[in-house]
Image 1 (cartoon, rainbow, N blue to C red):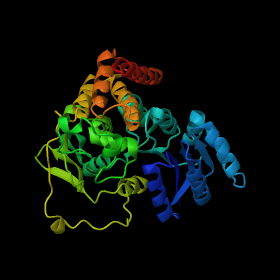
Image 2 (cartoon, helix red, strand yellow):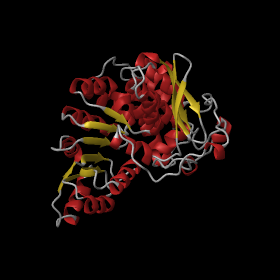
Image 3 (cartoon, rainbow, N blue to C red):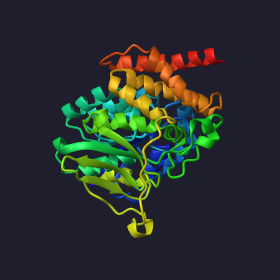
Image 4 (cartoon, rainbow, N blue to C red):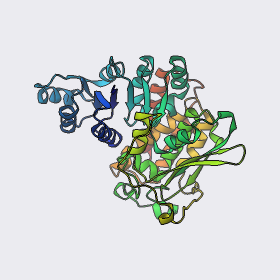
Length: 386
């Protein structure tokens, strides 16, 4: 019997790779619903190939265009948040893959949990901003959250069958990003095109820049704290520039268990789709002798301030992680348009955090209000700087 899946973010990096797996295992995986932002042409191709029952475009103009393009098909086209929420509750679905970027993923994930769907989670912001809402809701509904990020999937695999109380610390790895090894003086004049040249991963523009700034790794620290019920200070970030060791867990007896594989996002996506089973994947077997050695480094937190700022937000808790994330999203959007320098991203995040009055346990409405306030502060700070 095939597993029925809904994917939001289907035209992005994770979404398209998820559909690669559905294409390979078409007898075992059925796509019931798809959602995307504005890429109508790709969504049309996906609908024609996978025949979902429903598709959603975030942009209503794009949805209207898609309705015309697919008028010959038995697919219902919706738009906006209401469309995403309807997809999350789509009758007959077994799994909900959240592969969108940003806080747009929070409400659909909560809706999918309430509908009893297994959650495959590739959207960091869902737990960064709303972990205190998501994790209790999943526990109450008896819903499993399966991580799709390569690092969190690695940790999940290392913990399989291990008692939680025996964890000493989590070792969260990162490649170091595009600018690994450079100092602040060397980053003064880098532009978005420079930051987008990640040597190991194909992650999409915004995530690639977050990887370069180590903001992405800071978000993953917060996500891991919620997923695995550990304190942020029990998570150590280690640079592994080859991106072969994807993360590890250190246990109370001194044992370290790690997951190693070639860097390819198909692997954690497929693992989530078929968990607890493993299926063949068209990747080369890892040859340790040919690899020769693995390199490990401490992250440069004097240069790449995304990580220490993230730890500060995580320790503060409440609404502060939302400010960290939203300020970064706003700053990165300006950086990608070459309106600010790379190092300005850190200054804008720090300024937004300094200006924020923390809400200890924010409601969903307060989270969304905090996001908008943080974005507005970044825009105001930019006006002052200009």
